[in-house]
Amino acid sequence: MKRIKQAFSRLLTRRGRIHASRPGEIPARGEDADLKVGADTPDAFGADASDSGADAGVEGESVDFESRAAKRAPAADADVTVRQRRPLPGYYPARRIPETMWLGDAVDVLAPLVAAVGVNSLVALVGERAPLPPQLSARIRAFAHAQGDEILEEAQRRFFDNPGLDTLVIQAVTRWWKLPVALGRVYLRGRIVLGLDPSGVAAKTLPRIPRRDYESLMASYLAIGTAIGWFRGGTVGVHLWYRDGKKFELPEGHPTPHVRRLDAPRTLVDMAADIDDMYWAETTGQVVKITRVGQGQRRRWLISLPGTDHVDPHSTPNPADSETNVREVLGLRSAVYVGVVNALRHAMASEGVSPRDMTREPVVIMGHSQGGMIALSLLDRHPREVNVRGVVTMGTPGRRMRVPRDVAVLALEHDQDIVPSMDGRPRRQTNDRVVVGRRLNRPRTGPLWYAHSSATYTETMQLTQRRAQVSPESKIGRVVARMQPYLPQDGEDTSVFVYEIVQELLSGKNPTMRDTISVFGDVPEGAFPPPIRGFEAAPKAGSALGEWIERVQKSQKEKP
Image (cartoon, rainbow, N blue to C red; front, side, top):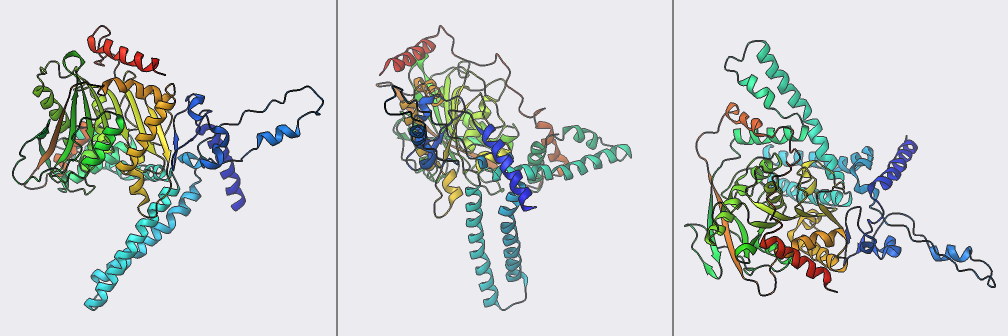
């Protein structure tokens, strides 16, 4: 049995290496990690491919082409020039593709963790419920707590060392959820057939249940969380705190944000650093930074969005919570989405933009984690409420969302970051965005936190921008060049706005499941269909902004 398993593993590994990537996906030498991009990257992106096998951590044999050529060389008196073979390109390791992971290997990785969690839970239960002396109970609880921390660290190490395992786990959970969903459908059909549905609730609910596994799981979680009182988000409020050196008073009881980076960003790296700084704001709500660049017809906007504030299912005044995450993956409006749109409109109105022109002002958005979901969600709305011309996502589970072809989208995803896989889709080569991967070295503690940290993604953004400067004709260079004209140029006027987004919490009794079942009806039919052609609000070819962008791009290409 062991030999059969090894044979299948070799077969799947070979298949995975053939289909995982194409020539050109050569891990470039980073400082302490490897930067990788999609399939049709020019050769300039991986110019150092000849020695990338050992230093970059690419799996496979290391071949000495010079020694082979020397062995085949003719006699010394022969007038023949020895032709050396071109080194083969590097590839992603096979474990990067979830479908190539042997199921038995996944079980071997997860089984010890599941057993350890079960034993530790039993010990904690004994410390809580068993009739033992108080001192002994306290020692047992402390032991269980310490063991829980060790199990958590071990789980992080195992997921960090096995990229792709996170996608397999999400897919397994969604497939397992087929059973309760199927039972729910049978129950509703039974009530309809037996005439036990006089009010017609079952008849209305049955066609609303999503057919796809992942959408049905998320919709069920949203409905159950609302029914038991976890999700109580209400009216969304937006408060202006800072504008061009002037700070405004927030509502009573709201602490002053500790935002240090209040200057206009000049590069994409500056926008990533702004996001990392806003995570330390320590405010009641979610902080968002909006920058106005230019005046008149050349005016455009930059938005920096942080991610999830807390993963606790209970709602708080900060709307960057689990409810927003679930609603965004289902294509529903979330509190953060509404707050960002309202904050942008307030900033535009402050600059004298008419309500008619607010949907025409070009916007570039960078978001980390949940912030990237909000940015992609703004592209998936019809009609559009914001004219998004460029998006940069960092560690965002947005693989299910599609973007129009005329929008420049750059997605940064660390190989060991499990958050981008939370939508149940593995990383694949797509034509609607440029995906940049980076292979990290495992730290001593908290490897998954390190992989998803905004500070780590800021470093990756710096490496990405450096690669765009070195290889302007690569995929990275082309997508960064499309966003560059929207950033502030030398001597251009800018204005900075900082807003706080908060939500009111609903009070009273929890709604019934019958009242919350309408959530299923809000899920889009088919779940994220392709965008409709023709609704893009792109700048006209003859407009001053369009001509100015063309001139900036032309001048950048002419620079040596």
